[in-house]
Length: 482
Image (cartoon, rainbow, N blue to C red; front, side, top):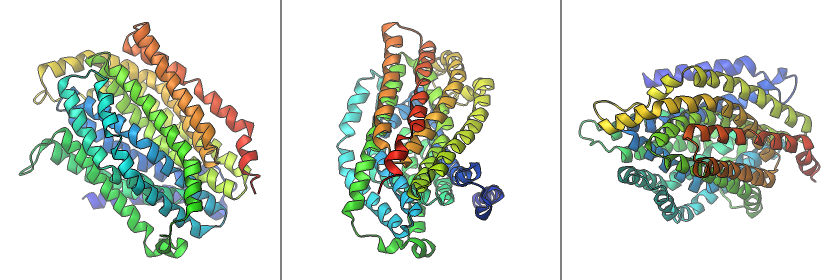
């Protein structure tokens, strides 16, 4: 039945893409149709990845708020510590797209293999950051049970770091060449495996004991292994080898690695600073008490559902702008950026309807199971419910702001303007974190009012990115490069 559903789903996506994608009939490169061909599979792929994380927390929420909050807190710290490496490696998408646009097809596979080598080299460095995660947990003053759950979830994900790094590197090649349906199919398969493993490992089944939080972490790693294997199998397949000589791409190339480090490290630093700032938001909300922690965890879980698919549009923006930069076609690069904005706002409008009109339904999905949870856990959820509904409604505007940020940031990265994006995003996110600290810990505003201030401050950022794009500095720097 699962395979029947998979093929039905694949046929549906193919029908949508075939309706829009007629390469010989494109009126303009970079129009909405052009972006949709790359973005739709990536949006669905990111949605599947989000669903994996969402299911982790949903299943754990039935055990109690402590387990759910631990998964959110540990997952955010793990992402923050991993993000430097994955962010640096993710610039592979832009480099592959630029080679494809510049008619250097064989270099596409060589660029990807350099990212694989960097992923493997980064694993020991990633392990050295594990004590930093434990130190961060100690700053939260968490209840003893949540702290123990958080360390367990975090340790398992971190020791599976090689899986996570390769899982993030593998899609970069296919998103760079614009064949994002491959990424979508791999993510779908990983999601199915993850959901099945999570259910069995968290709650137990037959001879397999219930593992709780640890089971959720192991299920995530197993799902990532499946996705990664599928992508590498496709990379070395006959069809891919004929086009890109993938089986002859193993040689180490210092010029390509140097370029990846030069442009990728700013992206990695940017993403690390972004995740560290986001983690500080979670820490500060959690430190306001169990009700604020539960309400903010529910809100951030749904924000993740809304935000991560937008990253598919960001990848599409990076890929298409990089391709047209490589082809010296500035007009198409600009068109693809504005086309991404149109698609992003359409998606955000749909999500906003759910956030505004159904916040109670969205909140109650995370209600602890009466048979499994303690009375105190149920009491915490009931106290947090009104706050969660309020924060979800405010998050509607937050989603529309995120569209501007991800599209312009992705476009600037594709054009090679990674250093500016690093500074702009880092300063912006930490300014938001400082604003939360002031209103929540200096002026002692309640958590839901503090969230209003966070959204208001965050909403000023898109103007900066828009002005950078309109200034055309990226065009003069890259399009005129010899």
